[in-house]
Length: 405
Image (tube, rainbow, N blue to C red):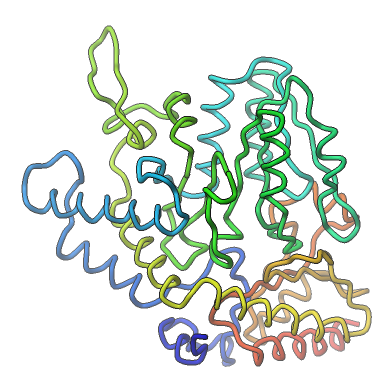
């Protein structure tokens, strides 16, 4: 097991103060902080290897290209994809979902065809499909959940019809922390010959992911949630599916030959990477994945599970506390309300105590309506958080309650 105290030294921002108090950063589901090695990789590449990739014969371009493609291989290893050609670099989870939704709807769906999503999806995995529904007349069907925040598998299976074309669901809820049984969801979908896209934004930083073992047809995530830079993300797609989908955007790199009469497209994965890629970001993302791999994803998962259980125990002892999501399998996200206290007021006062949490609907308004609330306070944990920070959160909530009631 890694040493949390020593590991925190890799994250300079964690040593700063906010309003004269030590920073307690519990907004990791929104974005994680970056270890020094990731920031240094960005600086080093700009200062020593900066050149556009793939198109240049000169030394810097060749070196930058090698770094970029080595990063693709690092991602492949991290999620155990079969081939590096199945790894497409994007700007993040949202662009990855939009890419699949657009290209899949264009080539695989007609008016009246159906996509299955769940009630706990992030807006990016709802609106992307709604845009296609407005454009092509496809239909969204929604997997319901129980009051514990667990998807109802019996109801899920009933949603399939001969018009069902794809399932698109979150691995982990960014509000409830529920770890969905994605392997079973995929098994059921495949029994109906339906492919599955998994939104892994909230799972990749916290648990080992093996896309081949899961059987996922598409798996997407963002770099900035796994200790990497912003503006870089990943779409994994099984090669047979990526081959069948048309390009999402046009421009340089995604072409093989262009004439005014006809364009032929590049091989995978470049068919989906129009324009200059974020080759600086891909290198930094690879550095972040190497960093968490060195700590051990199993150890990170074990550490965060302990933090979550401790946080649930501490927070449940606070009078008037209401915690959302009681799934048996859950990740390091705790969303809550305290009776008589508005979540924005709670978040504001916690901030004044140096405690960073997220408030609002967390880009999951349909889920909020299902729970009967307008928003919650959300604390989310990462590999560098500590038990003492959980204590600070609980004590901060108790103090805020005294001030606001």
